[in-house]
Image (cartoon, rainbow, N blue to C red; front, side, top):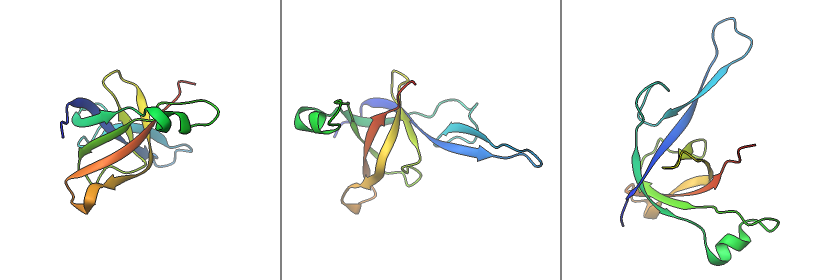
Length: 116
């Protein structure tokens, strides 16, 4: 399996200052502590949906819902997001699958986040 597509996987950090009414949210690359840190890249095998998967993915309007395979990382959950090499943002659909429960690779299904 070739992991040759560069991506970033981010988690959302929510902070609330003492006495503040609202909390602030920021996305941080897994492996970093601050959003201002240099990007942390991971490599994956990226497969776009095609054929019947592509047509069935949404009955009203077909959408591309790619699947990626990355090295196992327990910090990656359904609350994370993925940024591809074109800086397009994808949300994780469902929980990542620990392939064969071997703690070696994870399969993750994605859906592109609309700009609107």
